[in-house]
Image 1 (cartoon, helix red, strand yellow):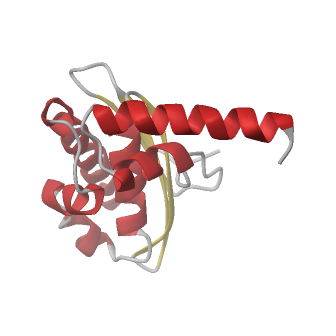
Image 2 (cartoon, rainbow, N blue to C red):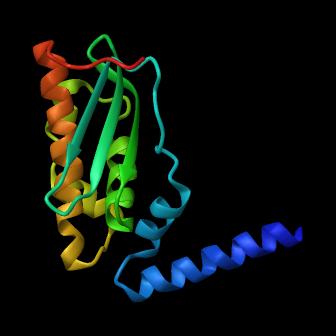
Length: 147
C-alpha cells in the first residue's frame, strides 16, 4: 500500500469511528463513504432538485426506458444521513417501474440503512420527497431533462 493509500485508509477509519459513535450503522457508514450513486446523468429524462428545511439539497437524475428506471444518480449537499439515505434510495429504485418507485416509503430506506441517529430521520424524508417529486414531474411532462 502506498503512503497516499495509507493516509486515505486511515482517514476512512477515523470517519467510520466518528460516525459509528454518532449512531450510524456500519451499513449506513459504507453507503456514505462509497457514494456509488453520487453524480450526474447527462442524458437524464428527469432532473429534480429539492432543498429541505435543514438546508440539505438533493438533485436527482432519472433515466427512464419503457416505464422503468434504467439508471438513477443523485447529487447531495448535506450531512452523512442525507448522503447515505440518497445512495440507498437510488439502489432501491433502479430497475423498478415508476409506479413501484412511487411506492417507496421512508421505512424501506431505513431498513437498508439499519440505523441512523434519530435527529437525522428527516434526511430519509427529504430523499423520498425528492424522488416522489421527480417521478411526479416526469409523469406530468413538466419535468426538466438533463443536458
